[in-house]
Structure formats: structure tokens, C-alpha cells
Length: 212
Image 1 (tube, one colour):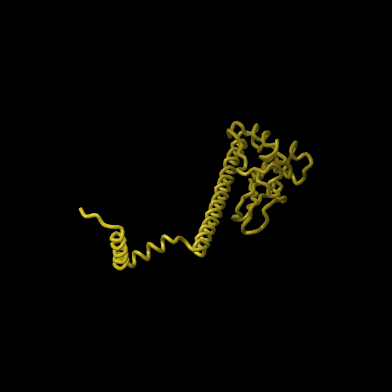
Image 2: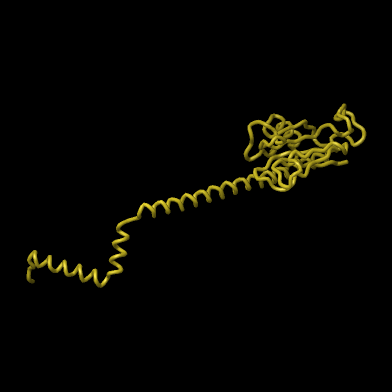
């Protein structure tokens, strides 16, 4: 096989390059552009798009988490109400409570009273260390005292009229305001509470039951 001199090799390489570039002009340009990388403007656009998408994802995850916790709150309250009704069916009245909340020691007292009807009292999934649900804290609060006779004096000891502990209320707080606050009226028929206010969408919910 003949051996090519260096100058012959160079001549062939140059002509092959020109031929290749001429026949594959479009591909050559594309390759050449890609090899040059992104411009600063292109990088800024890409980064901006990523930032926007990341923000959307973060917001979506946050909203989903809040809705999930709110759904649990509603389910927890339903379970608590079922336990209270079972207690009432046996005792003819609701367990006494002057504001027992899931973030204070009173919750353990309520747990003792309801132990035969519920394994463990629920707590708010984003439990506030202090504060009451009536002020917007994330906790479950239960009240069943007084207001049964139109007067608080002796109402939970010896009571005529509507009877002793024939009503209760539960107050809790949602993270996403949704729907009206139902409110509750005490057994005396005149005292009522709606801690979430009268708006069409409220965060604080006041629910309960009046047997009279």
C-alpha cells in the first residue's frame, strides 16, 4: 500500500472538510451552534422558567397540605361528636367541661370520661402549643357547662328547666376558610355563640348540639 506524505495528507483532509461542509451545510451549522452552548439570555430565560415552575409546585403542595389537614380536622370532630352521643345515651347528659382543649390538661379529663367510647381523643394535626380555638389557635376545644337554666348559678349541680348538661359546643380552626360558621345556642335558648363570625367563609368553626 502506498504511503502518503504529510503534505498529501493535509491536502486530502482540507478537501474532505470542504466537501463535507458543502454537502452537509445545514447539519454542520446545527452542530456548530449546539457546540457553542447557551447564551446568557437563554440561560436567564431557562432559570426564570424553572423559578416560576418551582413556585407553582411549592404553592400547590402547600395548599394540598392545608386541605388535607382541614379534612382530618373535620373527620376528628365527627368522631368526637359520636363519642359524646354514646356518652349521652348512657348518662343522659354530656360530660362536664369548662373549656377543655386538646392543647391543655383538660383534654386528659375528657379522655377519661369518653374512654369507653373512643380509644384516644384526637388532637389538631398542627397543634398550637398554647391558646384556644375561639381565638384562632389550632386546637380542638370542648365546652359543656352552665346556661341551661337561664342563670349560671348552680346550673351544673341542681338545675330545673332544660336540665343539666343538655348541650355542648366544639370549636376548632381551619387553615383554609370555607363555608359559614354554624354556631350553637345553649340549652337556655337565648345564649348563642359563633366564634367564626357571620361571614360566608370562616376559619373558626363553632358546632354543637342542644337537646332541649
